[in-house]
Every structure is written in C-alpha cells, then in structure tokens.
Length: 357
Length: 256
Image (cartoon, rainbow over all chains, first blue to last red; front, side):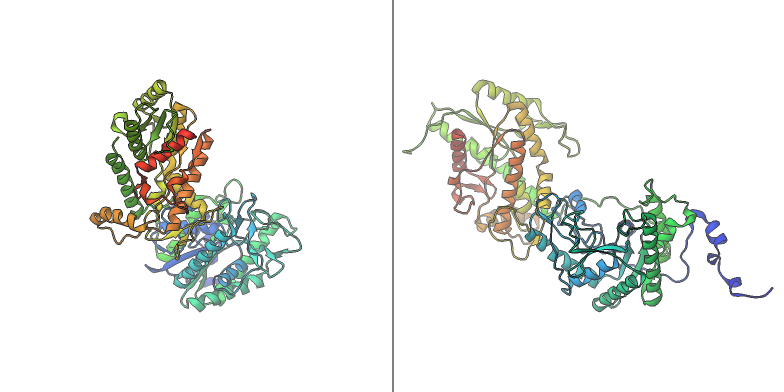
C-alpha cells in the first residue's frame, strides 16, 4: 500500500476512533498545551461561562488570583451578589474582545469614555455602564460609583501586572458601542440602566479580523506591563440569549461562535504564549448529544463544566481527579471584627454593672 | 433645677446595655422626686428573664420568640403601671464594625447627608454593602423589636447614642482591653466613618421601627455637640451614655 500523510496520524486525527468511539467524554486536546506550575497565579475573565472556570480553578488548589475582594465586614452573600469573587477582579462579564482591550485602556488611563455613567433602572442611584449589574440596585450616587470604579481599576492593574496566566473566555461578537467614541458596553443601554438612544448608541457585530486584531492588541498591552504573562483562550459554549443582528438567533449564535473560534485559533497559532482550550467543542460537539446543556438549551450543566475542567486540569496540571468546586467560600469574618465584637459586648456588660439602679 | 418639668408619665424602657443609663437616671429621679411617675427598665438579657429568646436556630431569628419569663415581666409592668413603652434595643452594631480602625481601613459615602469628610486613604465600600453588614448583625435586634411590638404594642424606639468625637477617650479604654490580648497596634477609626456608621444604624433602626408602626426618637439635641457627636460629659464609655444622657432621654420620652 502506498504511504501517505494520514497513515501515521494519531487516533485524535480520526473522527471514528476519537470522537464516535469516545462519546461524551472525548478529550480533544492534542499536541502541546499550557503547563501550570505550582504557584502560578491564575486570573480569569470573560463571559458567563468563565465564572464556572473560575470556580473550578479556585477549588482545585491552584493559586487563583483575586486582587479585588470584598471588605471582610461585608457578608458573603452580599459580596457575591455584588460580583466579588466571581472573577479575579470585580469587572463582571466581559463578553467581547473589544471590551477587554478597553478595560486595559481604561485601567491605565488611555481611554476615558465620554458616556461613563448611567441612571439606575429603578430611577434612584447610578450604574457603571461598563459593569452595569455589578452593584445590585445600583450605586447610591455618582460619587460612590466613581470612587468604586477608581478602586476597581487599580485592582485590575494589579491583576494584570501580577498574573502569570489569564484564562479568557470569549463570549460574544455582538456589542453596543457609543457612537461618540466607540466605548463598548457589556449590555445594551436601557437593559440594566441608562437610556437607549439610537443617535448615540450603535450596534456592532465583530468580524474575525476584528476579534483577532483585538486579541493581539490586548496581548501586546498585557505584555507591556507583564512580559511573561501567558493567556488561555476559550470560547463560551453558551449560545446568544438574543441577537440584534437581524438574523435568526440560531444563525446569529453560530456566526458569533464561529468567529470567536476562528479568531482564537489564529491568535493561538500566531502569538507566543497564547493557547486555545476547546471548551466549546467539549460541550457542543455531536459526541455530547446535547447532554451538557440544561433544559433551556443554553446553560451548561454542572456535569458539562466538570467535564471541561477535568480535561483542562489533566493537560494543564496533570490532575485527573479535581476537587469539587465550592459553591460558597467559607465565612470571611476576620479576627479584627471578632475582637471588636467581644470588646463592645464587654462594654455592654460593664455598662450594666457600673450603673446599677 | 429651676426649670425642671415634673415627669408626667410612667415609662417602661426595654433593651439591653443602653438601659443602664436610663436605669441610673431613673434611680436618681426616684430618690429626688418620689411622688412623680417613675421610669422602669427591663434588660432583656438579665439572668432573671432567661431564656431571653427561644426558637433561634443557627442564627436564624425568623421564628424567634421571647422566653416566658420575659413576656410575663413585660406584661406585669404593663398591667400594673400602664406605662409609655420605649425601646433601647440593640444600638451597638455600628461600634462593632467601626469604632476602631480596621486593619483594612474603610469608609463609605452616606447618601443624603454630608458629615465629616471620608477617611483619607480608606477603601470606600458601597453604602448598600455597609447596610448589608449592619443588617446581618441587626437580625437579633430586629427580632427583639418585632417581639416587643407583639407583647407591648407600638412603642417609641430611642436612637443609639452618637459617637464621641474624642479619640483619646476611646483609645484609653481600648488599650486597656486589647493590651492583654496581644492585639497589634490599635487606632481609633476616623471620626467620619464612626459618625456615618452610626447614622446608617439609625436609618436601619428607624425603618424597622416604623415598619412595626412604632416611632423612632432621635437622641435629644442637648446631649450632642454642634456637629452631632455625643458630648463627653454624657458618655459613660466609648459606646454608652451615662446617667445624664439617661435623664435627657427620659425627659424627651416623657414629652414625646
């Protein structure tokens, strides 16, 4: 028989052997991948699927980097609802690469959007247009929002400068931007604050070339403050909830994920220290037969997330049985607060003893 | 005192540590004016009423109820003296959070009020999260207010004493406590955050009391300095008023 390039390929190159035969537990990582060393500081950002990645990484004993944590006096449930601990900093979901680049630029004072405060949906308080759901009910005042944003961007800088690895999950290509300066909002104005104005707000649907360029811009900027930073790109398997593209949402979701997948591939091939991890394929591939989607055919089940993270940790860290992710971190009351409570309670007791009537 | 107004109502003041100032003032008043209506107090956590609360499970106070001894004591006072009922329930959650400077210094912006400027260099926490921190600590007090209303009907709740401005007064007492506990260097929290935390507590207590059809009574102006801090001659310690504070509160309750 004549020799040809396919004859010496590994099983992973053949659909029948590696996909049809493996079923839902297929491991599609082939070739070199990122290696996480003990002590590597890992940060996360991206669309909502990245929240799962963050949760599992934090639970797997890695040095999960959190530079913006809630103050210890804040109760855990309130902190979580306010977006603390969801990602490495309190930026909420970053759906597009355009947002990611602009986050960097805002953090380093390279971009100051014109429209940078929105009225809260309930009519009292304000929201930060670049993370409009981060503070439930909105911030009490513009001054409070600006103070919080300044602190937030400082923590973003700290994260960018100290991380070893950033796991970024690409989520969407559709974005609403300011017609004034191109500032990209994670949500359409009017959805969670602000007022939609067709004269001031424009719809954008990013193309492969744009996403690829923006990934390159971000990597360049990140390396300018952290030369050894490595990046893992994944594509969120969660389809669009809605589209403003004019296409059917199924077609729009396919376009969006295709663009992100292609751009991520190109970036991983072109840029040193940039890796692609196939979360999207693991969840959405035909081998899964849809079992990793919840009943709404959008949300990824915990089983699906676990499958993704099992494969990620196998290749990145040689871990076969990752720990169970914690749904809620342990209580955060600090020693200082406990000591204060004891002292005040003692004063309360002494007040009674001292003024016996 | 030339312009002293005789007390015209029997008063029943219920709470915890802040009843001490009331009790001391009531005692002095009773001794000086034995024929006038009296002020009586119930400290709900005194051993004689134990258990103060029943039905509390793992910090959940939603099913809490006063112990039978405490209910009987309140009902007895109501039946015998037909008093005007007041509450000084709780009133120190703000001090637990912000009397001394936290190792991770914080402050917040209080909506709708100015007050002293924010603590320089402190982390600014959103006001809603400060409210959440206070609310978590106030759950037992909210339950006590609800239970008091159930036993005694609508009542007047007296605002907690404002913070004292004098850091030395606080530090002196803090050092004697923390010195023996091998705690690191202690600093008094900034005057602004202490004031704002007290104001926030007052807002939460007012909302809770008014939600129970009660009345919230601010501390008398006479015990405060021009900026709203507790005058040092009305302070028993960094967190409590003294007998003269109690006397001012009794007079205000009597006029309310």
